[in-house]
Length: 223
Image (cartoon, rainbow, N blue to C red; front, top):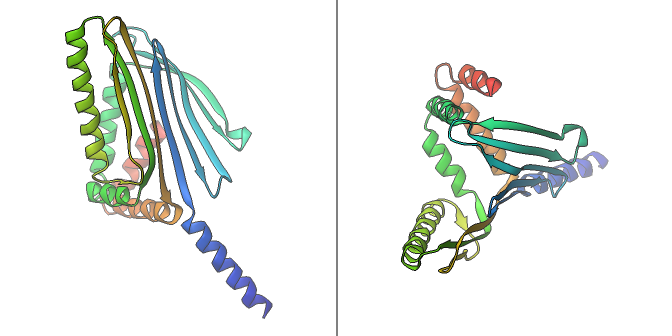
């Protein structure tokens, strides 16, 4: 009889875990020359926590590219990491080519991605931008372009992801001086069970492509 209760308890715990949410908070802000970007992920009711941050981005010219400081922190201090990298045009092109190869070695990648996104929920999104070009006409035109860009991006995104809250969008023109700043925050979540299932389906689709597993392993190892 005790074993029956233990088994029932394990089943309940398993269902609670699988139906718990994996949440991700994505934040980006730029004010004058200062950039700040981070992604905070929580799972298993906060037992698992991970934060990836880029607190400092410096543009060093078209030849030298971007100087980026990045940090990775978890609730396991031994896994924390902080380093500094430089990203130039060649790095961007190389990563793009690697991404194309990875996607090419997934059977029906677009279908898998759309299915996964439909299980993803957005509980909050806000995006505010201040723009000023020291010219009233140019500022007005640019303000309209930014509005159009934001609505287009969010329209494409929320055609796939389930939106649970009204987006908070703002574009504030400044006609008398030059200014640009933006603040973006988005909170998304997915059930842990769906996330694990999506990962399993991805591995299966990679396995079904000839040389898929080997290609993914080689590229991810180099990265």
